[in-house]
Image (cartoon, rainbow, N blue to C red; front, side):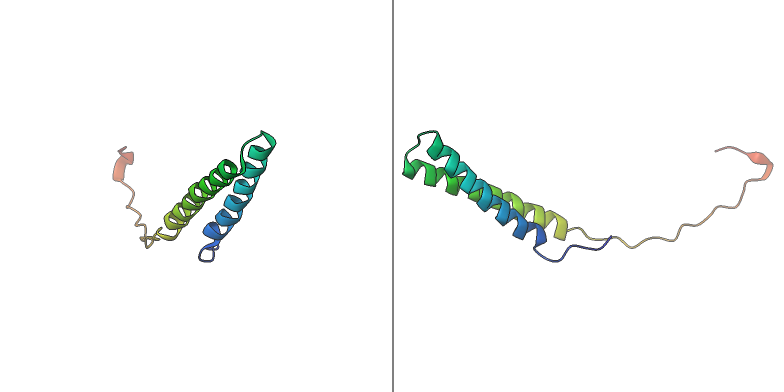
Amino acid sequence: MRPLPPFTIARWGIYAAAGLAGLSAWLGLQAGGTLDYVVLRGAFVFVVFSAIAFAGEALVSSHVQRPRHEQRQEPPRPGGEAE
């Protein structure tokens, strides 16, 4: 599996956050909300989803790959002893 380029999740998370904030504002206006409330709600949605995107990026980028240990094979036990 190829590693993701840096900030891929954060970048797409920001795009998704902007889209969801716009959708939230549009739905708020359709429901009869006032403009200031709708803008505040859209900004809140953007901040929350941006934080989730950057947290996801931090989790993915902080994953340290451990070196693979060589697996040693144990010699077969005499007499068919079970473990």
